[in-house]
Figure 1 (tube, rainbow over the protein chains, first blue to last red):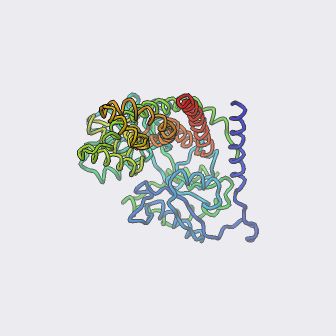
Figure 2 (tube, chains in turn brown, red; figure 1 turned 90 degrees about the vertical axis):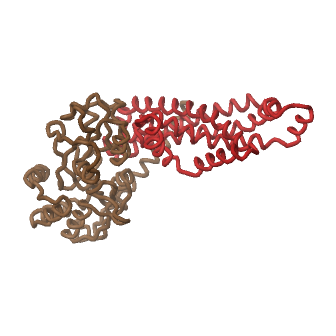
Figure 3 (cartoon, rainbow over the protein chains, first blue to last red; figure 1 turned 135 degrees about the vertical axis):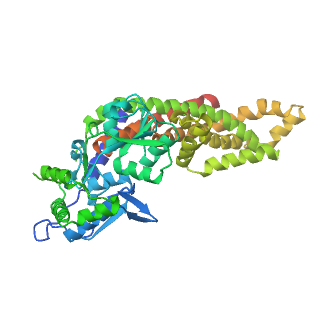
Length: 277
Length: 217
């Protein structure tokens, strides 16, 4: 039996390794500088209003407008396709069909082991949404409560750090929509999610008996980046285009369109400087 | 890219804990489903319209809608309605039980109806009641014919339980998604999950083969 299993495992590993062998072969014939000019396909998980979502069959949102401006600036045709989260992660890692992903992906050290990122382009943090009247003023108050998050998000890893990896009171649901439904259904006491998501929810559901609180101490600012395969030849072009659209005010214009206010550029700029060193 | 065994070993204890939940939920649900399915199949076989139609509707509903949708409806709709609040474990067991009952009901029905009519007629002419005929003639023979199909259903149920991760039940898939989320790795968590499911279902099918042989000969 043990022998059989080890054979199976070896077969699986070989399958994996051969799948990884099909990495993108960089185009070397374009002026020798690895300039990408062909149509670049972006993968996204369009279920994250207002960042990226489906509006009557069309993908829209802040990220979508942002990436359009970036690729316009870089002079590269692009297309954004709704692949869903997991498919986005695998296909961007392979980098053959999809050369990049944009889906409010926070830049973290753990994830940098698997991917490259563009310059940070958006500052976000997590927000706590809870039943009105509950004694919750910061993230530590959630320690012995039931909390729902979208699995595999930074909200998940922050709460995992506070509550523990195998704490069953931390419920990692498939999407923020399900996490919010879990709160409405009374299955949890609070939801932790990106501030943009929570505010959008509150805006659409003003009559629900919920309160929100920010906790800058435990939930530090995080920054979204465009997801790229390791060693991506696109990174240089995308990074310089991001810098340009921030300088020429195009970024602020898109930000105002989606959030109705001016972005606070100082901290984002600081973060950009830090990561371009 | 390299295959990272270090993150697998980090998550293995959790994955094995998830495996126990998968096994537990599957066993409870297949047993409850077998009981409920038997009742439903008797309803479906019945000539009385008020028994036949609800059973038939039940079977068609659960076989005709995706399990994914059933889980969401039961978790966010049915369970809060009954308990006044959502409870993932209750919803998970309920969803698996109701779903498997619909399939096992059809297994019972097929098993019972696969017997030649002559046998029940002979039993009646010996003066046996309907219940006695079922108890002594039909069921013992039908059960043997049902075992392989029943085993299949159990294996399908074990695999389908992976969908319970969407309502945050900490089973195998739940922890592999967690692992994927932390490192944004895909091969390591999902191949490990596949291997665990494969071992589970492989051992299960071996066990069922054994039971089948024991019962038939």
